[in-house]
Image (cartoon, rainbow, N blue to C red):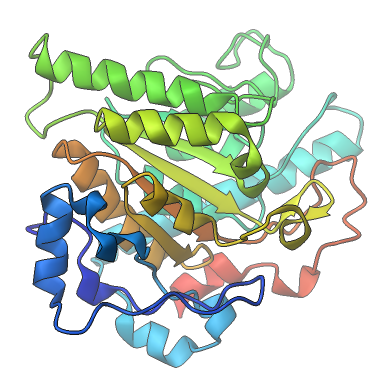
Length: 347
């Protein structure tokens, strides 16, 4: 993609603050999208205009599905099939985990990803083999999207020696060195410093050891949830990543619930993407239930990191259809929405 930064013309006015606050101001009068992009390329985080975060309007909130369909980026038939197959694999795999758990065949804590498949597929399927993924305790589908065989992931859940961690990691600690999956992490925010370190290593290999691939820097994706964004590691790593222009994308999977705590009750400003510009990096909000929109934003963020232009904070507003873990009775879920991310791709 020719643009060296997020193309301002692609992004609509930010969604109304979910805390009931005012909308962020639009692009300043007299400022074209090209001049806005040039300011970003110059490292214009110090420019007062850049204190307003760029955002993609969430169709889940806006309800404007007709306009969203017209705005979808074109994908080839092969690309669409790859996206569809990856999301279906993730959904079917997690449903099978639930069956095995309730039959007493699987033990420990098991956190399922149902409903959030568009985020994993939209981001990870754009990566190269050398790029890294750092996950959370909800990591099965991230592993599948990165190419870890489903048999290896399921064997790990059963504690078998044929699992990707030889049966010693379990549900919350998926790891695969050949696929550069650097682990699921059980503690909140624990993976963000690991991802930041991986991005620093990629920059060091590129600038000092001259070992990068032909496409540019290796990119790291750091996945975490909305509850993590109130923790100190999140802010420290945003600062460090922007200070050193590390090739990392911080992906917030905002499923609106931190275990049983509503995101609106736990955060003073629930629009997480706004925290990006505070550190000088783009902050983008996208409908995390729409794999094509996630993919479009992911493509720009990953390419920007690969060119050495620094990190991006992406808030994907999504929704999980099961409880926090399989020990949760799913009392807070809305089963009527069940297949939305997958069926939306078909329409």
